Image 1 (cartoon, rainbow, N blue to C red):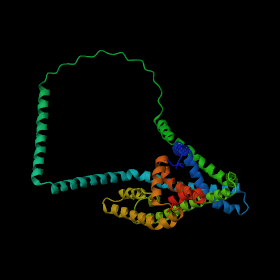
Image 2: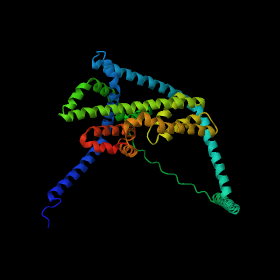
Image 3: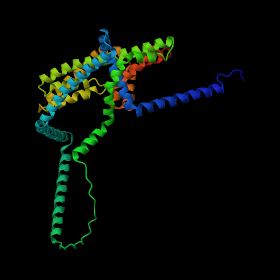
Length: 398
């Protein structure tokens, strides 16, 4: 029996306790992310906007403007741009809704035509693949079944005509219970209440975003100093580098995606103009920015092209041309432009991106798919600057 054992019972119990604590902590964090998703999504979104607007605020602060005034000016300009963009989108959507009844007959006719062509194709395939004797046997069986059904219906009609009609007994009047009428809400009020109640939480959280962004910008120096006071010595320098690394990564990712979306919007809008699709200024940018959604961008980008073609064409060829054009632009942007404009700044390997999309999409839904990559890249930026976490940063990286 050796005098020195590799592991003592106390060390084993301590390791088991550490593993149990880690599992409990991970479960608690996931539960917090899920049940607090509305608050956390709002906070993360406001933080991203604050990182994006920080350079313009610093630019105006160079002219000796108070930081609060510079923040207010930049936030006002940003809100004005958002308002103008929303006004343009609203005008396009309102025009589309007004013309929708005009296109409904065309769409219904095209759907019926496609259904007829599909039935014809199905019959031709049936005639080609199924031997003639089997087709004759099936048709004979169908005719026999139809004849039997007709004979059964005629027999039932004769029995009903020969049957003596017996007058039904007159039921005694039953007392009508007294019912107190209650006033029902109007249909418009009920619809508005149901619609707004479903989006109440999202609208409430979204209303905080402008205020959060303004206070994050105007109190940026105070927040940074207060955050760095939690660390001392070398750790304070590491925390400052991590802060700056996350900010640079978020700005590079969002600006790169936005510039890529603008290029795709220009190309897609020109294609839709050339194909004479209605509302190309709405459908083109919509298709372009939907193309940037990870993994599901291609089918989402094709939908606006199909919708515009349904309002214009009655044949299949333009649908194929539009779908192939959108797919070509998507693949070109994904394989050539995206690595240069976005991927070189994020440095996440494809496996991590896929798992991140699955995790954040499950926890935060559709917003998680949009925020998955910047949040994961921010975690990687922190790991790259913290010495004890650098191995995790290398694991997440490409």
